[in-house]
Image (cartoon, rainbow, N blue to C red; front, side, top):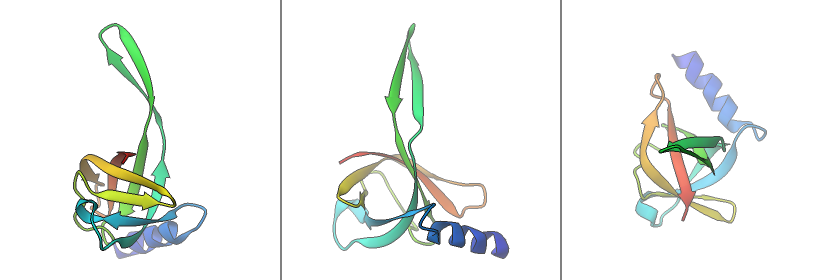
Length: 104
């Protein structure tokens, strides 16, 4: 597991893969610097006989940088501020959080 964690640390440090952000627990200062990988997949949701297309924003953050994220926390990426929506989910190895974000 140690080797896998080291590899993930290198991926999150790579400027082509991840970006800098700030984590604001409960939306308040002090902010904690984090590295995150942004994902913006399109989603299609069925609603009765209609299908609704929507843009989404998800972020992956290493658990070692963000030990206990929760709904309502805020993440600042550049000049944009996002709110954690729903309960973050950890990966199988318990090393990465995946969070759904919405504009704050």
